[in-house]
Image (tube, rainbow, N blue to C red; front, side, top):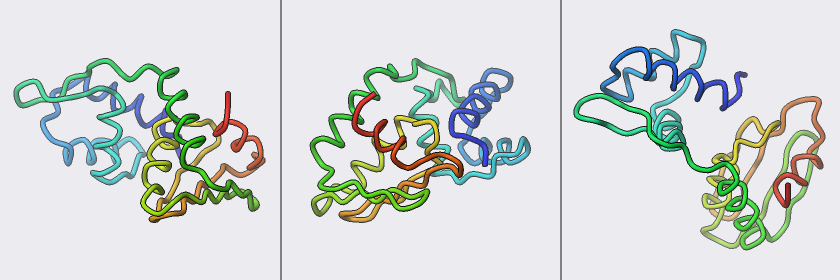
Amino acid sequence: MPATADRRRAIRALIEERPITSQSELVELLDGVGFGVTQATVSRDLYALGAGKDGDRYVLGEAPDPDAVTRHLHRTVADWARAIIPSGNLIVIHTPPGAGQVVAAAVDDAEIDGVVGSVAGDDTVLVVVAEGLAASEVIDRLRTE
């Protein structure tokens, strides 16, 4: 599965080379270059890239500062994670009720090497770690860099 960073580089290249007027158009173009994604994923990617509409087409803005994103991740995990439990190539993060999506969004925004993706529930986050990488390594990245 291609990494988030690779997909975002592809989005950046597509926006720079042609006018793109809708997220559904971008979903189709990404599919054509090997990234089968949903409109929701494209929406998050555009936000992460600082992209927005200028008239009827998407333009690139400034992406968030990677250091600030990492600090936000560490602060979010410190504030909301009640327990972080590894299990094979999975990590389960327990949070207070209602905080699962907050933690998952911080994990996704941080684009941690080795994280394939996350799934959020109300009070639990499931983080999928790439095969061949120890979940404990990713847990260290969640807590501190």
